[in-house]
Image (tube, rainbow, N blue to C red):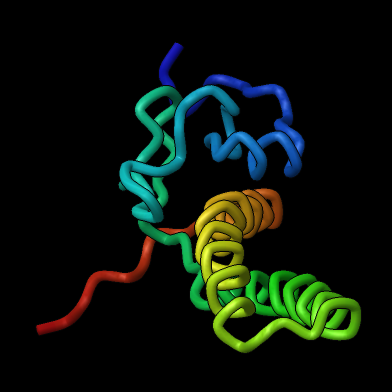
Length: 128
């Protein structure tokens, strides 16, 4: 049985996103680097060349992280009124760490949604 004719059990979007796994087989890793998507899944052969998450994950990270950090910074300001340098020391690592931790699963989730809705198509060949 070839890879193209095998049937794969459905993988939940949450499992694919949180585990950063292939949305078809759910076994292999989706990323080759920090945010670099593999050209294809080594396990099931799913082609990722048509994925286009674009700026979607970054927008969601900005909204989620912005809401959390601004709320917490306002709370700290109202309760303790520290100098601005304390805010800079406190929130810079939270923002950087949160962005790195959230970008991968959100990008994997958007790719899983593209697969679920049959939007992972190879781009047409470019005419020279």
